[in-house]
Length: 622
Image 1: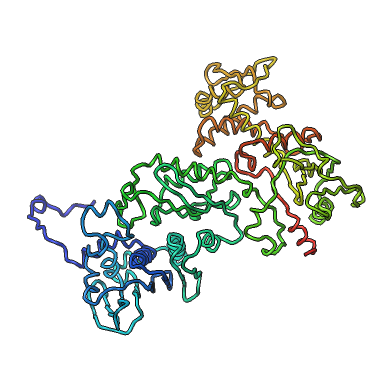
Image 2: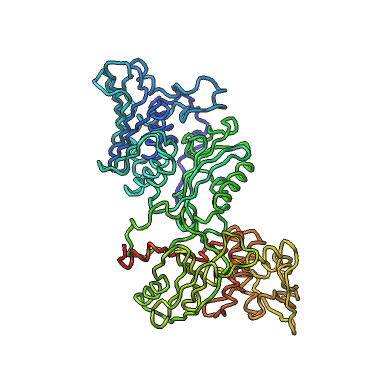
């Protein structure tokens, strides 16, 4: 049994209030400003940008715990002011409180340098451009060690060594070297995105990670930092309270976290759940569930509408018009994604990276409707070699881009030629959506199409799912889906959890074509089902649909889309459901009239493209 040593007299003891020592104050401030080595990099590089530098070098060793070095060619600091720069709340960036309403600089608190110097051994060398020499200052643990003139290049160099050497508790809680290095690399990438007019060099343990020239285009910088092989879509426009410029990745570049997103407001790198949500919502069903888009978005907003004075690290901001900004980002990104450049390209695994140029997606011919079958192909479980042989046969050499070649399946020989002017054009198809040939099918799942010089493989399940999803959404908006009355009503007992989902979704289910009602207890009565489900088992189907709706609701789907997606998924043709020729043609024509024809509601592609260049490379014809 533990007995407290505190007595009533102790509680009444007089306590003295006194100012904390300067070094303690700086260490407390360092706890907010300097969370980890990446925080030091951010504060120092932003100082360099505020100093007007157009070339900045970032060098780190042991993920910043041993050394962080920032070199710039900015305006420099005068000898008489270099010591003042390490005083708390000393800054050249604002002078009055009203300046906070019109911030044009990155820094404004005057806390970073004294906070960093209080938990490290810091050396700064700075020289004005019109001076003959520079000034060196050494500070260790917040205590000035020396200050003297030295020879130096114009600009400022700062070395931060042995970070947190005098705060072992803080150093103890740093992550592994790999993890801290990842934070710094992401930050260095973000800083480079925010200022394409500035050249950035980033070195880790004396090895160069990237070297970017000044005055680089945002597209070039995006390809340099996010990947040359990735396909990007440009977003640009002005709407509501903001103007937006950026490049976002095609849906097939999405990844399992948000680390590939770089969002800026007035060139300041920020973390914004609001804008991240708008970005992901604009992709909608183009994304596979659980993945997030990559890209960089530069927003310009009236500084008076942005409050950056929320947290010392300045990565959080408050926005005066949150809803308007969210909606503007959503509309601009969604509009940019309405393009054929996001169609997935199927590239053979053995093909060299050089075979596909970064911009080749932009020149891709459209996948066009108006299809006609000449003969059908069916194969069961082919080997890789047999699959490649099939593709080679289907893609026999062409004399011109407008000429289609037909191949005899049994011999592999060209049996006839037919000009595209004889190809069927669907009623209502636009000039851009015409002349596609239905070649055959593979494994009772993929439909094989030829469009000009390229081959397209259509997944019949995801294509049908996309078509049905949009049709069900329209029927929900019209509040009346087509039903098939059952000869005998069916009663189903649901689990306690699913009966709650049923009550929430009953109205929408009835609008989609069901006729369902509560029968009592946990029993529901089904009298009719949507016409597109007549070949399905209503008992099993209905329970699975409620499971789908429950899962989709947990991931943020609204109820209408959750119902539409579940109905579409459970009604679509599956692998092994063999479509006849007319059904296959009709499915593709309906797909190409969809608002979003590139993917199913789950985000899986409805078709992929195999280019002639890919095949030529694979077969050594280049």
